[in-house]
Amino acid sequence: MGGELVTTIRTAVPADLPAIREVYRSASLSNAGEREVLLAHPEVLVFDGAAVDEGRVRVAVAGDGAVVGFASALVTGDVVELEDLFVDPGWMRQGIATRLVEDAVARVPGAGPVEVTANEHAMAFYTSVGFVQVGVAQTRFGPARRLRRG
Image (cartoon, rainbow, N blue to C red; front, side, top):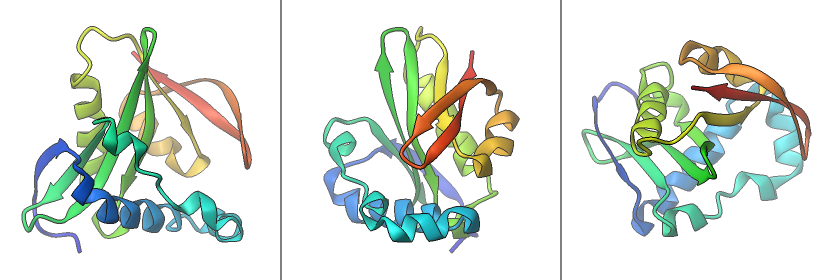
């Protein structure tokens, strides 16, 4: 896995969906603290793909053409909601998620703050790229932190 330079961030196309789904599943299961509950609810481990069809998913692509991460964002009013941010576990800690966040922000010029609902495992990353906690959101599996940047 990791090692080859990520050379491109581009808009996902329908042909990317199998790779996006694999990244989504493997990244979701990479957090040991959440694995058991996710495996008990396998339906949440399937990325539905609607955002791909809507052109809202950006993929990070390795030099060999493999999709190694993705992000999706939705503009609601004056806020950019970072809906998804996932990186293949073999490619984590190589700056891919940071590049995807920066790409999501840059693609909506003039938009207001970027917000995300984050689990505990992602907090260090999000604070490292400028997000601060602004509240708590209730999710299917309990409370999660609500973060904002900008």
